[in-house]
Image (cartoon, rainbow, N blue to C red; front, side, top):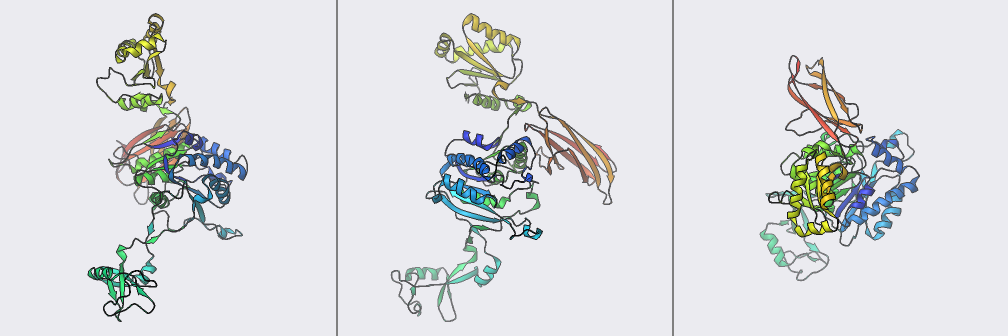
Length: 558
């Protein structure tokens, strides 16, 4: 299952299975000692920033090294890692981290990526050549068996004009010499009265030459010398080298307002060269979510990890924005806390499966004829899940009967050994249920365990949210200007607001994200407009408010 996970990547990586990932791309915070590294400004990101800077470069390398060690562990033997950095610590990272963990023999490339949209700092008076490039270190876990797909890019136009300078009814082609310096079989024959140049041989056998002739792939010069045709539309292009200049943003719509966001073209190249469809891509410093968005686009499985609530939620919105077709694969978002309302009112069977797995049990795949039981523990003890509050005594009575029928021998064994005979999970239990469980224990020697959902996973209430608007009048272009004010409250504190100016089909496609205040002004043409605002709190829980406005001579909320 594709996953967005909130947390320190070191702790999350420790929980991942060894040799389970095909590709890791990481763009860790650079060793620049600049406060602009704190982008979202939430507690998790600030804490991570402080951890990195409690010492100098030695501390930074130690901080990053223990994380890369875990990345090496989770990589498959055929997997690779691409570590993105700049000049501040690139040499330290290569020598003291990557060479030591992956081995010099598994170094593949030092890719130079020219950040064509950045400013040349030499123009601002810096006493060195302008720094406009980042570095991406490419290592494999085992270079001899690592997955790698050769990539091609289009020929430059000047090369095409110079090289593919001939044309026939099939299109543009270039003509290559059919002679060779060394013989290879019967290659000294005469072809249509023409012999190879002195001291040379034909590059192909006469049988191959005859086949070329049948396919109309031989071009003859004015002297009658044969050449082999290579059509432009049959050529894959030029192989990609380690200097990347054209991996840039394709449009303004691609940008999400994340200052260090990387272009999708950059991640597309990395993902396509090192993985195939259904392979697993991991980004332990998720940031703005470009890696997982591109992996999702090209049918790879993915895991994104970040210590920032904002990073995880913005990525979730970004994926929601893209995943509007019925073939989009689902993904999960793992936060520190779960929303009570979502759990309480979600699909019952999905909740049963989820909560049983959280206590290490196995869920029941049958929904009928299961005695009302929803799973079992690792020891085979039956579990019943009630997606409700204030469970009464009648539930205990029915469960007690089902437990005995489920496995009579197991029931008698657990009773004799004074062990738990069954587990009931619910949001809360009433006085009658609690008293009956106590009676069964004291009088019948039967142990029934009552587990609240909040004892298994941390839960919280999502933030409250209200949305108001003010009409600011019409501008010179006859556009109506509206001020929107969102007000939210949460025990955890508010992280940010996000806005969608054209909300439709219950799909939130943000136009503005990471708004810390909750106030926006937008202009509209006459007509009906549906506006949505989402708020995210510091636990990552969210709420949404939607308002539909009819704008003509006045403004009305519908």
